[in-house]
Image 1 (cartoon, rainbow, N blue to C red):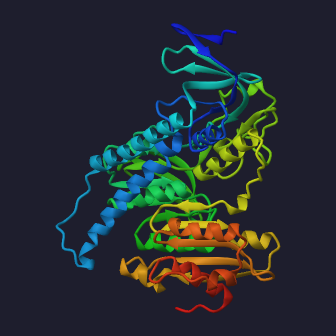
Image 2 (cartoon, rainbow, N blue to C red; image 1 turned 180 degrees about the horizontal axis):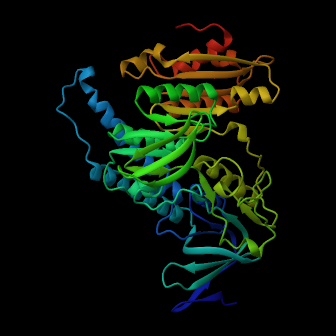
Image 3 (cartoon, one colour; image 1 turned 60 degrees about the vertical axis):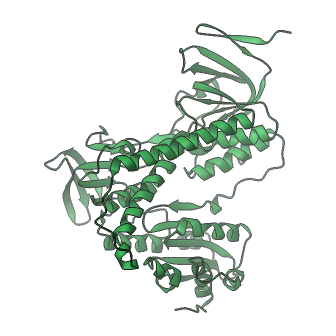
Length: 480
């Protein structure tokens, strides 16, 4: 029997057997799902409308921002080199070179994903994909604009998200940027206002502060990083004040307009109306799911505020259609999208799978100092009915941190008094996002505070703070 064919511009494209799964979107949810599907022997295709695979995380999010953060922090450390016995002439920032380094890292990542698709026999289709019926994904191809229809037993929607803005804040990419366009800014601005003090806002505030921009954050809620434990947020606020990064909390922006310095922002604050000016404004007020144009109207799926409802196995209301990542309710994080993608395709493959415990979602903010957490905050634990005990310990008492003059920040361990189970670990300090891995494993294994506190940690290391934090929760801290 000859293969089915579908018309495309300029000819016909052969489409052999029906695929097992088509994944729409190649971000950290989609491409990881595709790799796992390939490993499981599923006939898999991935559809991507961008020129390169990798999605927001690789091209406009996690990776390019961390590349710039590394440059900015390295510059800051070099400026202090004399304190460590290294005499250097006045260092300067070469911003075009920093941007070139960022681009090189991103390109390398994209090449790596291309290789992994070939290795795992995943068919890559470049174009805009949308569901047009049961088991049918129509792709408007990037090259030529023709259409190709993929027939499949299962579909995974992994189309991600885009930056959103406030109704009264117009992003023109000249005076007012979003997290996409700021990554292409040609020169270092003299001053920056950042609207939104979540992870994205705090990271960009750190970048520009390190490279010499006068920087301030504007946040509608009462604390920086509002989703973090309140003590961690307060500690970050102290460290930002120390670095002369300004911030306005409980601030509601009422007007954004051109000003003498570049842009003028008027806001209502607890102390009354206030106006600030800067060279540019960065809007970092969150992201919106990309669910329009995906073809949901051809399914039984009814989005809720743009998000696609799913069950514990990532299934939507439409049979054999799954959704993962930023398009579903929950943490909009790359590593969570990856976990959801693996769960979805393993369920498709008939593997025994278990729902994700979202209480164990790692949270990592790469500002300086870094902020990292896993598990319940003290407030959330009390709301759940736990009888809570906590312990805190400062990085200033960790000699490895003092060696590099990074004795800033703290750890907070949240535990249950009844069974001594560790419920949450929250850190602000040097390399906190790397130290978090131990906490993730510990909570995954339902460790007790005593077990964590009695675990021998190498000395001198930054990781000693995890042991010390647990001992502080037990009431037996050693080094303070």
